[in-house]
Length: 94
Image (cartoon, rainbow, N blue to C red; front, side, top):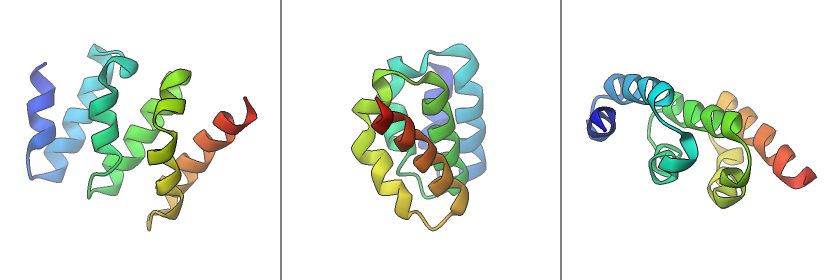
């Protein structure tokens, strides 16, 4: 996949743009390894977008990444915390 290599670049803007472009051409659950890595990215925009994409996908992928998502409730960025809490509410209701 063309966009995957750009997720490795140092430039956070390029990584963010690659993640934005990845969604329309892939199925999130088929790239959980990539989204898991994005949850640990230094750039809060990338962490937040990864959480939003996972939330859109829903289902078992949320359960698979529950531990990584729980860590993000302590993220320094409020939007990342909010997105993580939203997902965890869904996961714990089931």
